Structures are given as structure tokens and as C-alpha cells.
Length: 369
View 1 (cartoon, rainbow, N blue to C red):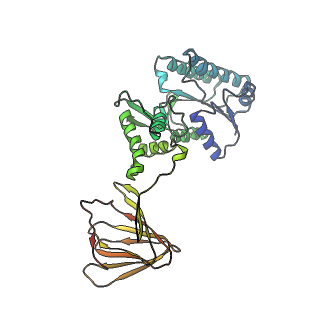
View 2: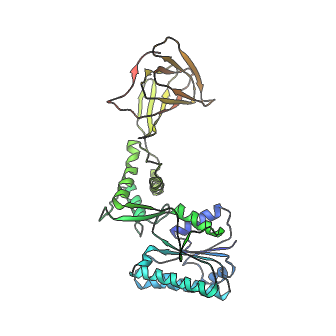
View 3: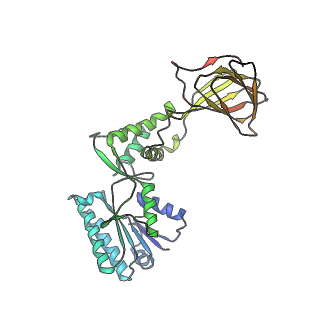
């Protein structure tokens, strides 16, 4: 299937083209303003579907809005008509098409042009009025507030928020791309003359900024955002895509002594915390029990034994563990327990606890196994 994508080096188009290729669509004609105009003629002759994503949104002169958003659309349609190619066309418009500013008027003019083209030729047209779109590969400090916030906050650069209470209607790039690709199989969602993306979000500027700052702080407090909230999950992925390439990694605090080390890795409010424990050969750690707190141990390197004793009995239970056979050992409440390194190399254990340490209520009581 030959697919023509205009504005191919833009934010939406880059994400769309990559996913089209992931799904096996290999005959993609990528058209940008730098492409030889002669190729537009060839592409319009061969295309079986057109994603018209080209547009102007930050011109030096307001008159360029109409030239870019109406003029090129007119040229595209005339070229298709020249070859009697009435293939389906998707148009990227904007919610601002409802407004009377130069950008909105140019977008509305492009929409009307396409609707008239459909009446004239019978071609299927799919017009999307996109709100604010966010996600990876969007140019910061240009026309996307979220891209700018993510980029600047990740680099400790200042941001400007004139009114924290301003509400933004938001669309995530992966949701948008998924829906666009579905129209190739006639699965679009239509409301009158326009198509809609079923999944969108609403948030204030203040809420968005606070979330992004919390993402930055999560490296220090080891927290993980609430991934059960779809918007938070997608915004966090977006933020990570703007990290400086020299700063993908960050240090953890290793609590070290002669026995080895204990390092906290991840903390969550509702899913507990994950830590890494390293024990030197012959070292035993633990010898304590909990009322409610519970843990899971996973030895990933070395050999050892985890011992248990219910606090009101004398029976000792042993589980031998090794990095050569990964298995999780639950640490139930009411059992004092320890872990001993039986090997001649360091033993590495991943430890999960259902809650992170509260020094005021540690729920940890020393008792030899």
C-alpha cells in the first residue's frame, strides 16, 4: 500500500511513519517542504492513502498561515485531481479552527477546501481537529508547552506559567498514531464532518508543571509516579524522552559496612519499595521479625540460605537459594528471619518490602533465628 505523508519531518508525522513501518507498511512517500516539488506529482499519482500533516504554526509573518495551511492543501488536491486519484485523505487540523485568529482561519479554510473536494470527487476525507498533542520528539521552546516544560525542567532551566489555572485539552502522540493507523482499515471515529480520537485528557497548567517537577525529584526520593493513572504514565514517558543524553543515569546511596551494602532502588506509596542487598561471604543479615510488614527476597547472584523461625516456636525452617536458580522467597509476618551467604563470592539479593521504612514506626524487632 502506497502511503503519502506530508510534513514528514514534523512531530506527528515522525511518530506516525515509525509506527507504520513497525506494522509492515513499507511503501511510504515522505514529503517535506525540502522535497523536490516534482516528487509530489509522482507521489500523488501512486498514493493509495494520504496523511496530510503539513502545516504552518509559527511563521515569521501571519500571511504565511494561509499560504501554508490553505495554499499547499490546494496544491495537493489539485495534483491528486490531475491524476484522477480519489484515494482517502486525512487532514491534520486544529481545535483553533473554531477561532477567528489567523492560524484558526487558515486551518478552517483548509478544512472547507477538503470538504468541497470530497463533494466534487467522492473521495473519502477524514478531518481531525487536534488539541494540544504531547509526546516524544516534539520540538521544545516552539509551540508545545509540555515539550518546553519537560525539556527545561530536565535541564534546570526556567519555565514561564502565567496562569496555573488554565486548562489544557491534551492528546498523547501514541494514542493519536494508533487511531490514524486504524483508519487504514476503516475504523475511524466520526462525529459529523470530523473524526475524533477516543482517548484524551484534561489538566491545568499547574497540575502539569507540578507533575513534571515531581518526575525530576523522583531521582532523589526514589519515587515512581502513579502508573495506574494513564495521563501520569504518558506524561512521565514524555518527560524521560527529554532527558539530556549525558544524564540518563543517576547515583544511588549505598549504605556500606564490613558486611556488604544495602541500597534502596525504588519507592512507591502503594506498591512498597525495592532494594538491593549485597552480603560478603560468611555474613548473616537480618535476625528480626515484623507484625505486618512483609518482604520478598530474590537471590540473583551467589549462594545462601534464608532461615525462619515462628517467634513462639523453636523450629527453624531453611530455604537454600542461588543465583543459578531464581526463585522468590516470601517473608511472612510473625517469623524472625535471616539470610546467610554460604558462598565464597558476594551474594546479591533483590528485596521487595510492601512499605518503605518509617523510622517512627519501623515494625522491625530484633530476635535471633
